[in-house]
Image 1 (cartoon, rainbow, N blue to C red):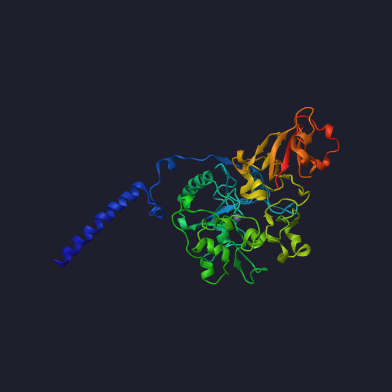
Image 2: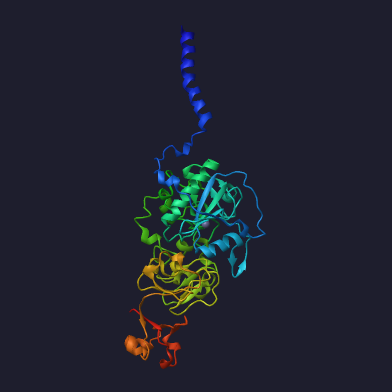
Length: 436
Ligand SMILES: [Zn+2]
């Protein structure tokens, strides 16, 4: 009896197992990492982003190597606009006006409109994570696919970017069998050697994608602690620990996190990480004076860097820095790095290379402005000079103030102090007056 019932039990047990096995054979292994995820609305599955192949642009000196193993997907924010990011990712990094790498710095870049640029096919090792470690695994570039979002870690990431990223993550996670929680940000996995803020190996070297919202990218689970800090391999960075594993909600304290302006709670280290003293990091002091990161120590001293100083990352050259009210969006400077959210104020104006003048509220995104666009902040106008009129009839006594600007029909943009002959200012010139 016993043995008979035992056999029957085995048979009863085996029958559903065989059924499950048959289902697996017919439809393939279920994706276990999807188990806890709610079903997605149908429209999301139908969405396919535009993928632009950019692999032919990668520098010839970059060596293609296939990764042997893929455990992670690393999300970065590029800390620059699209044009300069694509240049850096494919051609290499510019340091002090020289190319210092061979490119191949990501597998994908996602523009703010959602377009995906394939820099390197996902099977190739991209040189994107630098000195890095996760759960004891070092050199994360050799174990991961790298994705750059065109954004600053202190700016917003657009909904179009999240939509394309979610699609890309689904494709990659399926290909490599990567669990939700092993989609990580560069800020989480990078670490640095001892410096003026940390006496030992530590997190915080990179701030990349610290504003990344996992839910918006369709990720259900996340690490709730840093395994390398817990194991004592690295010292923690309070600011990042708060964001990724703390109780502080990123959105509750958005103001403090989403700024490149130095304050008591937002240090140069918080904004720039290891690039704090780089010649490509530019400090714009409240008075408008600028200092590259490698000169702050000697010319001012880190402790004397005043609150209100704006930190510009990835400025390609500190030559010909705009000292007056007119800024130019070039050499790595963008409307976001120069103005933050004020880029779309009504009192911010853009002078496009084609001669068009746009007030901030008519600009769709800070990265939608072409390179070499000129920009002014805190202005009213424009006031058009009609034939036979003198500028003082248009704006009153401020017409000669150094901050009053004249946009000539031939696209010249001049400060009043540069104008000698007032009668010679052509009709059709538009005037802009600085707000107090
Ligand atoms: Zn990064």
